[in-house]
Length: 230
Length: 243
Image (cartoon, rainbow over all chains, first blue to last red; front, side, top):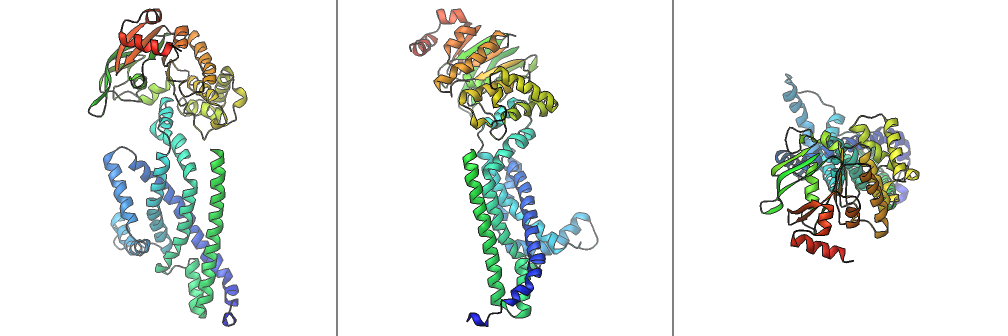
């Protein structure tokens, strides 16, 4: 059966798959993880702020995002963003937003909800004496967060944050609904063009598997190292 | 220096942690606060730099009303050192950075100046060799001495100690108390919550005894150890001085 496979298709498509597809996938993953972490941390701080209204708004946002399938959010957002942009800027026609920008914003918004829950757990894991000691030294709330609480919360949660980023790496393949050539999209295009669906999808699965496995192994090593330092 | 007038504090609607507490600490005075656990002594000292809010009365620190919403609390707190039961060094920072952080971010000192001040104080508490270590690499007694140095690095006008030796193994208590005794003899204004009656006997000017949120006894050291007026203080003393 393997005899009828043409693995040379893969070899010929490699430059396109990795230089275009994987580059897009990795760029989206890294930027979305970074943006998601920044906004997620802000949302976590809002939820823990003690201001009821801020906390409620952040809580509703997180629950809302976590109750929707990601693929729907990507899909809807892509079609809605031009109109939201028009409404925000007061332009006369829907603004044009590229597929990359649209998917990046979507992933940042979506991941922020998940990262915020991780950072919230991280902040709550710091004993209350730490912010008290920082306050007693005269640090303001924002200095206490920036220099004392968040660095520790981030460090404690680093393995979980990275694991979530690996999930994000896999989830970026959902941008196929916008027919963007990310890694999976590129593989899919070649597969359709050359009629080699089985080979290309097998190869794509293998690549996702290997990258995720290696990354997970790295996270486990890191976790062990952090555990010793503490 | 520290004036506490008719302070009332509740936790929730029903539990009153402090009942009409009034006392004061004069400049250069060392006041020891003792009492059974749950008596409100830690709560009282935390109210002095507004780590805990109060619901009634007033606290005045060096002429500034602590419980006034207009008071710049970070600025006020930076002028009063505080040492905690569980040290509360910042575990992600090296010892020197623990000492420098607030000097630089709060007082705006240059890094070299903050470092020089920090190292000088580390030397004073006998830990200069440990400057580059992380807090977790030090023993409890060493960590608490670093915590004292960290508070002193801010050049405080007064020091608050909240059970500074309660979390320490017995053999480490004296190294911390020695630093505190030196500090007291140099004329630092100190308010110390502790069960170490030896320390109180050595350097305290006054002893305050608290029970169930009230200041039951507030007397000169000699009077307090000589003949406490209240039954509750007598009972407490007999219990902890037995051993």
